[in-house]
Image (tube, rainbow, N blue to C red; front, side, top):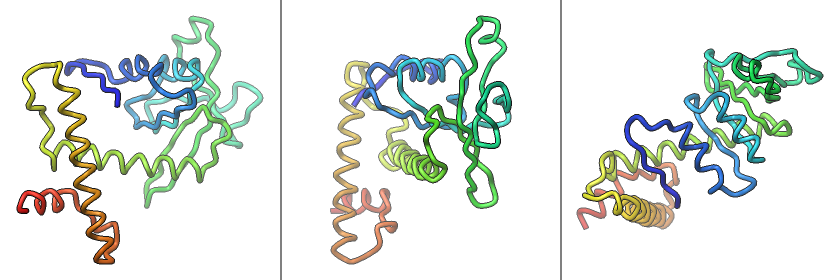
Length: 196
């Protein structure tokens, strides 16, 4: 596990760009709308990695700049700053997902990614967010308890190992009782282990 710790003012986009070299060569970054824009997207593309990122109305995409057409899902991202620097526009694929009554717009530099693949990948990202909430709330690690920066990594790793072990036991108990896996509740598992 690799962790980057920054202060409150640390830019997550900047940290993501700094960590690119630590990722596998074929890594795909999946992120929400706070990870938008140039230079992050350009940096990811230059590293030969891909991304799938949710975008909102604050991102200006061009429909028709080159040979790839909007009707086929292709768009261009070209900031004023990139234009002034004579940098080419980024060629992206725009994918629209239906989540209930809401539309979710995603962009990717993986032009071969299908809508169904993007939907599955982005849905799995939601599970990771739930796990982060479990770490912060159920495991009470919103604030770390160690007193030195050198111990932060150790505390985080042991927290994750402990949660994974607890959830494994919870899943095993559900399986033995032939209960559906979606009944697995991290907080109930932790409470049961505490009582035991």
